[in-house]
Image (tube, rainbow, N blue to C red; front, side, top):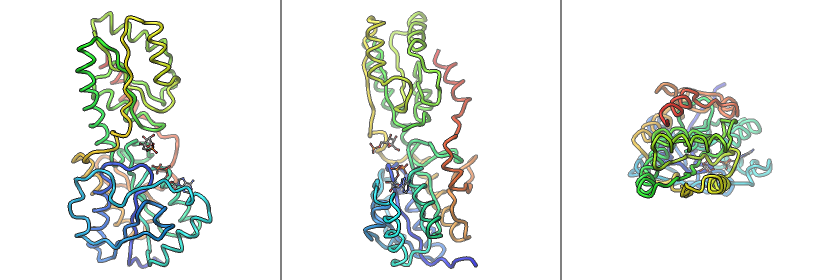
Length: 328
Ligand code: ADP
Ligand code: F6P
């Protein structure tokens, strides 16, 4: 028989992403719309283990839609990876009369959610919140669009100084093992080359040939976007190689780092987060569980959490083709 839902818990876990606040806000207000309670759990799974929670109502989430980060805070909680940790977490869910849990995070957080379901038959729904866009089954994750805009803004600024000095800039962007940020921000920022982990044919020789080609065709400065995931060589090794074999280039490295995770979410991320927050509560209220709410062609969809975790997610090959053409 379907479980009666009276109270829903929500947490943010793993790396924070702009738009997480908008997702929490949507979950809280959708709960209110259904007339069920909502509990915010602080610091991801750590808050579950430490019983660190707060009742949330529609007014508790006022003035949050525009804020980056997550007001519930996030954490990487190693104790929760152990089965004993999850026993404690589950006991606290029961103690607080929580009937279902919304987990906003990335693949690690979804793995934890699945385990809660497997071991205790506890209803969970995931919302993809990560700048990396590395979750299978959804066109976009919350935070990706904001990160892209941050990276493109940074590249535009780097280009100003690069072209004033005839310099080559190697710009490292985040994305963990995925090249989504690199490829889209590389195209948007007008990069000459984009190196991503999904393209296994990396060769430093190809990069050199591409730089030579740019030089011959009259380019006086170059931007190469390098994804932080494994591309065959670290960005510092690339710099040293180019310095040694093309001393005429004045090479600089710029690692953008955590600035990519901050800032006020773009309107796209706010709308996406609002849509997915409402869809997550809809799922729970109709007793759909073990799913991630994603987006496909603008519509919310439900994806089995096991499918969302599939590592064989394919990068958009059309983007690769476009990048090759427009960078010449
Ligand atoms: P993300 O969700 O952004 O991928 P992490 O991989 O750091 O971030 O995972 C976030 C949290 O999810 C971890 O700190 C841990 O509490 C939980 N988690 C990750 N992997 C597992 C696992 N295999 N089993 C149980 N919980 C996990
Ligand atoms: O998953 C988001 C992300 O920002 C990745 O792009 C990056 O590899 C990682 O988190 C960095 O993690 P941390 O904040 O723990 O250094």
